[in-house]
Image (cartoon, rainbow, N blue to C red; front, side, top):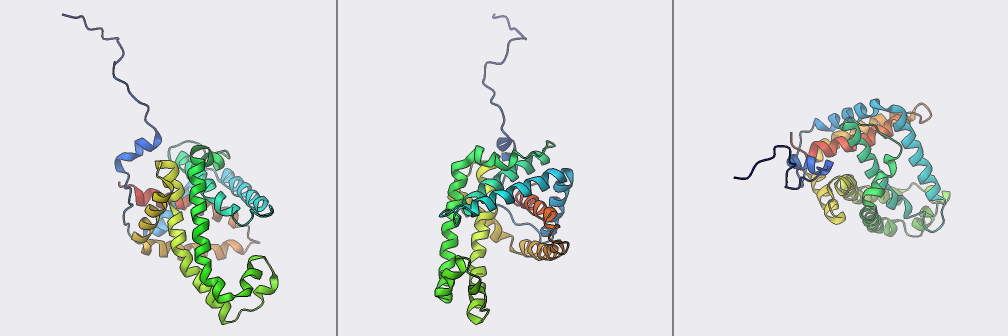
Length: 260
């Protein structure tokens, strides 16, 4: 009979458990419907995450603002640059929120961690979003005619006429842009935290938002009111509201895509 050595390490391979894998037990890939009151709960949760490291959050927002301003000054790519940057930077913020949620620290480097983790996939999400925005703008271009080109080029004269045509164009833009926002809302988190393919992430994000129209309506109304208040002190309130917004996106992702 062979002698058993109690100090011998196990022969089977034990893999390290990644954060994504540790969350997979209660992850709901298609998202779940939650109650209407959760729209406020997401904001409250976002505020809680902000309070833990308010100074770092403000620094992240300022740095992101500088990046967007710099990108907008680059000729030829200034139209597409925001669409390509937003998913990657948002994914980095989601990783930072997860770090806070896990009891770790939020750092400035989290802003770029999304690009390091799933850079090409996030660029694909941004490119898909840019194409969807272009499609959404087609009816607006038809309604506004030649004024549309002037508006997109930043000509102030294009905004001087607030007649029925302009108002109709704004309404059409808002209506068609809603599905685009729904598709992009959870996509960075799904791509980065769960390795979901870009197009699948867009579909899952849209479906999850569609299931939760009522809580999102409440969420949107509250944030509009908070935005008005934040603009009163020379817009300085946005330095708090913007981090709370990004943290609330993470809160909504955790609430909708996880059970328990």
